[in-house]
Structure formats: structure tokens, C-alpha cells
Length: 462
Image (cartoon, rainbow, N blue to C red; front, side):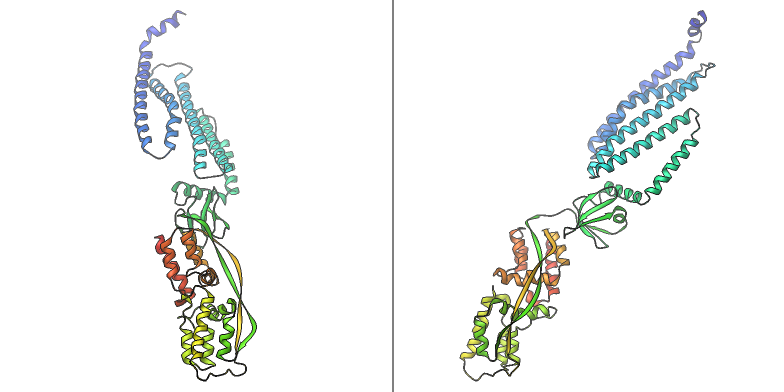
């Protein structure tokens, strides 16, 4: 008893020096911690990254324990006290164990907060977030256990072998998924492609990005189709990113296509008088066919071809002057087919009133009246803004273009077309609508008309 009481008084330098080092180191580390956290807090307030706030909050409490452990380790290092129980070695191993456990707990808490936050930001599914969180937490636990066992001298080779086997099996099972997962993480962190962007791949797929999950990127095409693209493909291919949607239309534009059929009416004319008389009462379907069928069937020819009446008068009746007058009538100047028909009849009546002899068509070369029958079909393309309209226009068939440009003017009975009406009334683009309305499609081929329209819209988008 007396020996135990006399030991501190006899060997007090061996005790007081380590204690003094511990206290001095603790004061210094706590001061350094305070200064560091003040500087880090000011830095975090200037950044847009929310993760720095979580990092500071998660390490604030643990950092006090780290200060104590560092100070205790320094005190042990200068201590000269020896004992048969090797308490210095045991204390050192204990401090290392506490350090590993505290670091593992901090990393565990960070994963628990950061993974759900970024999962919500990048719109990952709940299943993906939970799976990722479980994998990361399990990894932290395994690493922590291995480090603690290594500190205390416990063999870790069997455990490492088991872990390696599990990793190998997982790698084989997810050999197709892992590259997509890494690519998805790259897409999310770099934000080169974001939800809501309109993208176009060099392989032809295009549309609005709807979701980016851990395996696939889902885009919605202009025809309302859903396209799933592996993230790895999205990283490896060339992608044009047009950015987020522009001004939305009040009403979407639906593109239609037209099938053209012709039907004999049984009406025929063998001279100019009969031609004028029948044309006076002819329905619009007959007038339309004989003034537009050549244009539609031979859309690659330019300038505007003559109408059937002009060709028949010139070739069969031999009246070159009248044929040229009928051919010079510009269909673009008339708001509807009835006005066009009246103009044709007036020119014929003027010629008939001038007197003179008129030829008769020989048998078999009479003018046979044909009417046009149209079948209108919806296409899969719908435009909600000008960019969608442009991309749909690029894919549009010439039949659909003909319907919206040529037939629409006669159907609406206005000096305009479907595109101009939509641009002005639904998209509030009066200048672009007016440019397209003034555009004379009769002076171009359908391909040329399409190119001109694309150029006008591209210029507006720029």
C-alpha cells in the first residue's frame, strides 16, 4: 500500500510530462480545429455545392474526438513509463481503433445523407438510391472491420478472400450494368445532359430527356415514342444538345399526311364552249385536280407547270394564245378554288366573245373531267414549340408538306397556310408567320420549299 502511494511522488516527472504534452496538444488542436472550421464555413457559404455543408456538419462532432486522440497519442509518445502489461502498446492500439471507428462512422453518416440528396437531384429511382446506399455502407463497414482486425494482429487473409470472391461474383453478375452505372454517374456529375434537354445522337435517336437513372437514359421522341438509351452509349457517341425547351405553343401542332386519289366524273368537253360551260358549275374537287395534279405528281419540276386546261387548249385545240393566257394564271393569287375557277372561265369567255372559228377535239382527245379524292391521315409528329416544329419538319414527307402548304390555303380560303396560322395564333410568332405566308411555294419544288422553310426557322431559332 505504501509502495503504491509513494510511486507518484517518486516518479512524478514520468507522469507530469506526458500530461503536460497532452494538455498542450489538446489546446493547440482545438484552436486549430476552431480556426479551420471558421475558414471552411466561409468557403462553404460561397460555393453552390450543398455537400460541403453536410461534410462540415458530419465531421464537426467527430473532430473533437480526433483532437483528443491526437493529443493522447502525443502524450503516450513522450511517456517513459514501463510496465509488464505493455500498457503503452495497448493504449496505442486502442487509440488507432477509436480513430478507425470514428472515421467509419463519419463516412457512414455522410453516405446516409449525400446519396439520397444526389439521388433526388439526378432523379434516380428510390430503388437505385437504396441499392447504392446499401453497397456504399457495406463497403465502409467491411473496410473498418478489416482495419481494426489488422491493428490487433488478427489474420485478415480469409476475410479478404471472401470479400474478393463476393466482389468477383458481383462483377460478373453486373458486368453489363457497371459501365452504365459509371456512365450515369458521369452524366449526373458533369451535367452535360440534363433532364428536359433536347438531344440528338449521331445514330439518329433524338428527343427530350425525361429521366437519367443508374442504367438508362429515357428520351421522348417527337412522335411521342419512348426511347431507352444505355448510359454507356450516350457517353461514347456524339450527342448534340439543343438545351431546354423554348417558348411553348398554346396548342400543339399536329402534322397530317394526304393520300391523293383520282376519279373519273363522266364529263367531257370537245370544244372551248363546252369546256367553259362545264367548268362554271364544276365542284372544287374537279378544279383542284386539273390545276394542281401535275404540280403534286411532278413536284421536282420548276417553275410552276401549266394547268390541264391550258395544256389541252394549246395541244388539242391549237389555240396557243389562249393556252398561254390560261397558263399564266397564278394559283397563288387566289384565296380559294372558286375564285380560281371563275378566273379561268372569264379568260375562256373573253376568247369566245372575240368571235372567230374554234377547233373541235377529235374523237378520243376530248377533255375528260377528273375529280380529286383526298384521304387525310394523322402522322406521329406533334410540335409544342418551334424547335420541335423544326425537327418534325426535317422528317416530314413531301405529301404532308404539300397538304399543309398548298391544300391548306384552299381549305382555309385565306392567303396563308397551316404553318403560318399556327405560328401566329398559337406560338405568337407573327413575323415568322408572315414570312412563310408570303413565301410562294409554286416557284419551288417541294424539296426546295422544304429547304426554304427550314432555313427560315433555323434563322429564327438562332
